[in-house]
Image (cartoon, rainbow, N blue to C red):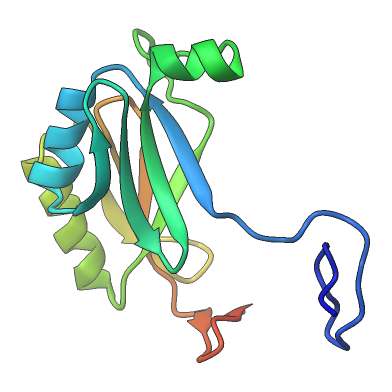
Amino acid sequence: MPCDVRSDDSGGCLDGMEQSLSLITLGVADLTVTHSFYVDGLGWTPTLVVPDDVIFIQIGHGVLLSLWNSEAMIAEAGPIVDARGGDGAPPITLGHLTADEKGVDDVLDLAAKAGSPRVIPGERRPWGGYSGYFSDPDGYRWEIAHNPGFVVDESGRVRIG
C-alpha cells in the first residue's frame, strides 16, 4: 500500500513532504502584457486563460507556470514584495536549459524580440557552462543556460557534475 509521504529507494516510507514541485506562481501586474510576452512573444501555449485573473502554461511533465494577477495573489496569499520601480528584481531566477550555446543565444534573441526589458548576453561561466539572462515584463529573471554537466537520464533523474 502506498504511503502518504515520499518513499526512499527501497520503497519504504519517509516522514515529511514529498520532494516535488507542481506549480510555480508568479504575481504579475498586467495579464494583457504578460500574455503578450509569454504567448505572443515567446510562443508558449497556455493551458488555461482566465481573463483578468490567471494564465496557466504547462512547462514540464505535470508542472505548470501560473501567471497570476498580483492583486488577486495578495488577496489570497498576503502581501508580496514588489521590486518594480527600482533597479532590483524579485529575488528569484527561473532556469531554462538548452542543448548548446547557440540555443542560449537564440532564446535571448527571442526574448529581446518579445520585448524583454532587460537582456544580459550569454557568456562562458566559471562553472563550465554558458548562460545569459532576460527579464519578463514584471522583472522576473530567466537564466538561459547550456550546462554540459547537467544530465537528465531516461527516468528523469538529474545528475550534476
